[in-house]
Image 1 (spheres, rainbow, N blue to C red):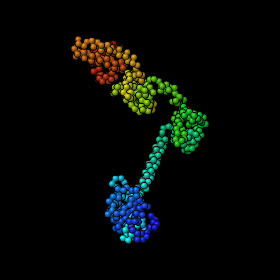
Image 2 (cartoon, helix red, strand yellow):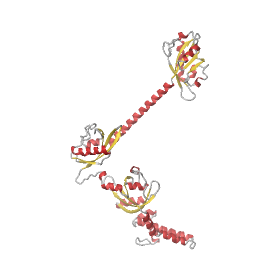
Image 3 (cartoon, helix red, strand yellow):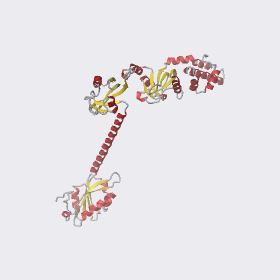
Image 4 (cartoon, rainbow, N blue to C red):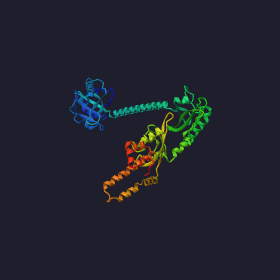
Amino acid sequence: MSLGIGTPELKGEALSHQDPAVVASILAAAVDVTVLMTPDGVICDHVHAGPDMPQHLFTGWPGKALRDTVTVESRIKVEQLIDDANHGSPPRWRQVNHPMREGPDVPVMYSAIKAGPAGHIIAIGRDMSTMAQLQQRLLSAEQAVEAEYQRLRNAETRFRMLLQSASDAIMIFEARTGKIAEYNAKAANLLGRSGKRMQGADILEIFPEADREPVRAAIEALRNVGRTDDIVLHSDANKQQAIVSLSIFRQENTQYVLLRMVPHVVGDSATVLPKTQSKVVKIINEMPIGFVVTDTNLNILTANAAFLDQVQLASEEQARGISLERWLGRQGVDLGIVVGQLRERGEIRNFHTIVRGQFGTVDDVELSAVAVMDGESPCFGFALHRFSRQRVSANRTETGLLRSVDEFTRLVGKVPLKELVRESTDIIERLCIEAALQMNGDNRASAAEMLGLSRQSLYMKLHRYGIDDPSTSD
């Protein structure tokens, strides 16, 4: 006897005279699940499950209706399955889900046929768990691809928005062929090609003939060495100069060059000096004295290597945009005085303060600063010279602080402690006032602010200690 599992040609009449238990056992060898049922759908003792099926799923099935072993949404499919078998309709495959106590439901594809003279129904099923897992993986893969595609679209949108909103003229071209891949409107306007399509054009062809050789030489140096100095291009057509910077990068096994142009109007006194060729800038960057430039709110714009070493930072990017007050001066005192002097006089010299490192170190420094208030971007420049240990020790000796400590030590036991404390307090107070006046160039208002005193209190203490006259010596 030949049975075509899953084919419409499988007829119940061919099995009407066979023992349904035997037929169910035979079919169990070809499918994953075989269930023998009464005509009304109640499961008999014969339930055969393949080795790959979870065996505990079928515990307690005999004596129960098949519709009670499936999920709620699958019950109508079981009823249709039994009804088709009882009426002799061509067998159809229907997928139902068997609930599990733990884990996901088990999907099974069932078809039912009649067998035996008593009208028993044999339901044969195929385990669809593997197919369901593959479908879930496919769905997850499609969702991941869609999410990645959306992420790339968003990244491209942000890139083009940044490219077009950049203040500099920017072009990106292939290093080998020189074909332009991307550019912004400012580049087209600067080169006098607004309204003309530049994508795919040769990078050298879009420059005036006088500028092509410097650009070609810079690109060649970039290919061979990996870096090149900035170059200055002159365009007689639009009466402008432009500083051109080039950098190379790799994307998808292809080398590209990012070309950035900063325009400058050519005038009688205009002088364009690229940063990489400026000796003054190089000296400032390499000098052992800390140098930092801030805006008028003391947010750092640029700093040299010596300043980064003083504040224990690895790169300039870590300091850029951070307030200078985070590292310089005593909190709430020094920088307030410095900024006040800069706004009033435009400069300050030899101001003694401290620099706090990122990891808790404190160094004595001497600060000189200048304010540049003209132009579109006013800024402050600070130079920080570190005190040597010998100089600090010499200053302490000159103040006589160590000598006073020795004298007070010898008076212990001879003079009451209360008088010693009062006298030492007066000496320290006087030394602090003299130091504040010295650091502020005898500016009593600034000294009072540094000491946290009112001007009237400071004047009273000056008179008390006999130093009300700035020329009076100790």
